[in-house]
Amino acid sequence: MLIGVGLGPGDPELLTLKAVNVLKNSDKVYVPGRLAKDLVAPYADAEILEFPMIRDIEVLNSLWKENADRIAEEAREGNVAFGLIGDPNFFSTFSHLKKVMRKHYPDVELATIPGISSITSFAARTDVAVESSFEVSDGSEIGYMIHLKATKPKSIVKQLETEGYTEFIFAEKLFSDNELIIRKKEEIPEKGNYFSIIYGKK
Image (cartoon, rainbow, N blue to C red; front, side):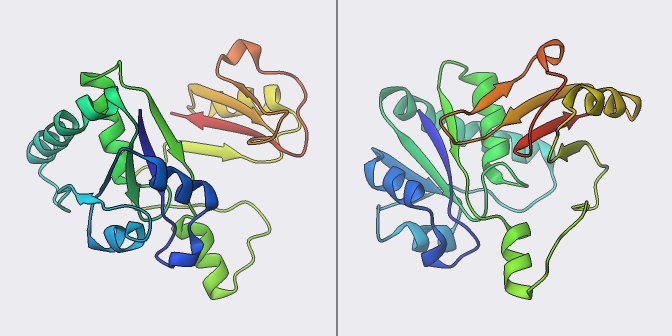
């Protein structure tokens, strides 16, 4: 299994207990840079994989494939962790690696351990309270929507469809004993609760 492990914003004390446990118990740990390696150091001897900040997509695809080739066999035989700053599913190196793994090595199981993202760490560090809907952008076209407190999930989906969204996930009470995740649009219920989320993708 290949596990993307969120290491948080850079403070060694902001790693989650689960992240620490995964790092300690993995057969191999990789990271994309020195800062991540330093955060992982108390728990594992990590190896740095090269993920340069360049825009040449052909070069990037070649490097991602090369890294995937390197990881695949190890991830088939044991647990391989990939530790990175922030969260593995938000503007992350691991997202690119995951795509390549799914394309070339679909038999390798993938998982992620969430980490404190730059979005929530910014709010904490700057004493900003976000109390209504907000937008996060890196300058690219908006392609995703996360709707919190989705108490009327089916009607939310219908509205998002008019805005060009085509893929949806309903989630409720995540990481609890009563967790529910629905990936088929036709099975999304009429009612949710305060801890329900609708994810939409264009």
